[in-house]
Amino acid sequence: MSATSVTRLYVSEPLGNAEVLKLGRDQSHYLVNVMRVAAGTSILLFNGRDGEWQGTIAKANKKAVEISLATQTRPQISEPDVWLCFAPLKKDRTDFVIEKATELGIARIQPVITERTQSTRVNVDRLAATAREASEQSERLSVPGVEQPVTLSELLESWPADRPLIHLDETGTGAPLAKVMMGRTDGIGFLIGPEGGFDPDEINTLNNHPATVAADLGPRILRAETACVAALGVRQSIDDLPPQTP
Image 1: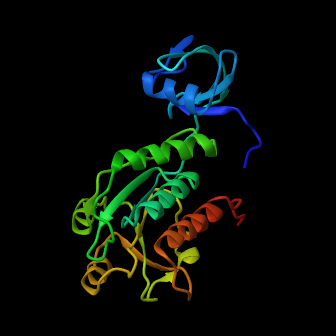
Image 2 (image 1 turned 135 degrees about the vertical axis):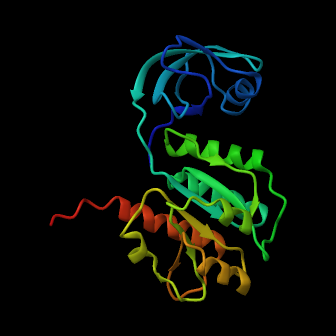
Image 3 (image 1 turned 60 degrees about the vertical axis):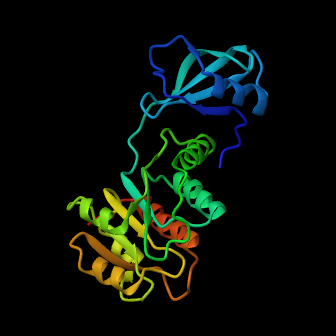
């Protein structure tokens, strides 16, 4: 966690060559009426391409905010190419998954409709906004993409053959997740099922798909949102380990 109190804002505009950045009405409203910024306030900007830049509010009203860019505070870095596929939950729990997945570095978020999915109505725009806010607060330099929902069969039909899809298997037949993850922590995907788990036919389909790998998170029954955080936490902890010497 960072002790900084400087507002961070994701923007879509280029940052490298602009001297003054003019924000649209929605972001101007957010800064003026929600964050209460005023002329002279320092702000940090990022767009997922040009790193992070420090700027100063030059003009601030609810219709237009102009920011004078100063210096780049951090260069753009490559981030793990890890995808999260999950069955949508009730509203607050889905928001929790999006927020924590963003904090834990997920690059792409894919809602998946399964037989036992609790909520099949997914507001992608709202989830994208949640991901954007989580990126701003967690000091990420990018925002994960949030895709339109697909069915489990559609997901598996289009899944890249060279990207392992680790599905958390509540039946206990998978290998421990930490052991599965020791072989590869990037260029992978996770699949988290709904409350109540996958139905038997779905489990059979997953076990017979060439790209899927069953993994186990331990002896306890976890809520779906807990399983998401636990799995991504394991991945990040292993990814952060120093290289092993021969």
